[in-house]
Every structure is written in structure tokens, then in C-alpha cells.
Image 1 (cartoon, rainbow, N blue to C red):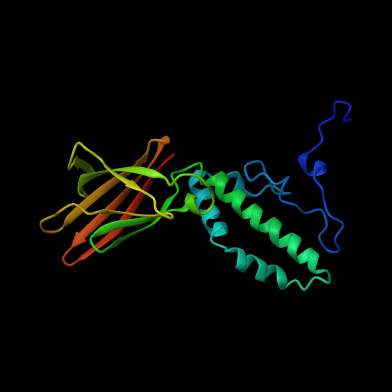
Image 2 (image 1 turned 135 degrees about the vertical axis):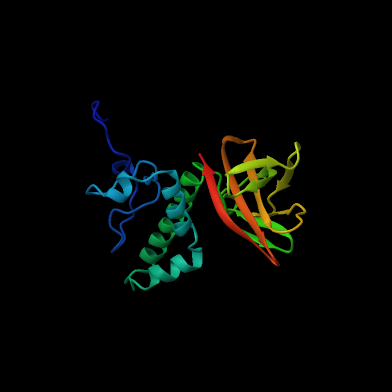
Length: 211
């Protein structure tokens, strides 16, 4: 019974009586609602792109790395080590799922073997069918900032284990392309990737995200 009073989620969680664990869990942790004890400009001014960048850093830690970090605490009770590691792993996944939903979580863009390759970061932290994306190529005039579509029909690519690639259009001489990546499941989110061909070198030179 709460008598009409609001009881915070953390007060309703179950905390095991483990030496050194304290009031720490993963169930009550909500990445979107979490706030620091004292006002922090980094969080107050954070937008979706900032949060996506930070979530990438957190999501990059593997289960093994997190366990190894916790083990450096040298807790006297091995159960405490296991509990804290499990909570941190679950919190990592919650952070990834929460903030990767705010933008199209495509990243690590690079040119390899004549194709634009990139990763779907969401696939590493969510279950379900692989993501499907549409790609629309344009020629990009870097001097005037204008786009000229190369085809009225987009190309579909599917994520296989989180990794995707799409062939680069043919180009004579030097210049720029722009690839617009979209998802039917997230119609308001997209990523535009700019690719430059200069002599024998072709590389990704810019990324714009829409959320």
C-alpha cells in the first residue's frame, strides 16, 4: 500500500543482501529518465546525436570486458562480482536500446572493395528480424551544396549480423556522391553519407543525421 504516495521504481526493486553490492540493480534503471545528482551541463544540453555518440561508447564494452573490470574490485564475495557485472551488462543493453531508437543507428561508414560499408549497431543489442534499409544515391555538388539524384529507384539492403554494404555508383573523374539511407520502420529518421572520389582514393567525408 502506498496511501496515494509515489514510490520511485528504485525503492520497489529487489536488492540482494550481498556485501559490497549496496543499492544497485538494473531493473529500476531507465536511461531516458536517469538524471545526475547535481545539474550537469553535458546532460542538460544533450541532444539525440550527443546521446547516440555516448551510447556507442557504452555499447562498445563486451560482456567479457565488463566482467574483467568488475573483477578488479576484488570483492570478498564472488556473488557480488557476478551481480554487479550482470547489472552493468543489462544497463549497457538498456542504454543501447533506448538511445539507438532515437536515431537511425547506422555507423562506422567506410569504403571497402568498391562499396559503401556500414554497421547496424542496433543488431548487437536487439533481437528480431534484421533491419532493412533503402539507399538513394545522388551526385553532390560540393561548391553549391546541391544534389542530383542518380536514379528514381532506391536500392534495398538488408543487415546480416549487423553489417551492410552497397555498391558505389560509377563515376568518371573526381567528384562526390551522397547516399541517403532510410528505413520504412523509422520514416522520420535517416542518414546521408557523403563520399569523395579523388584520383585513386575514395573515402567517406561527411555524415548528416536526421531524427
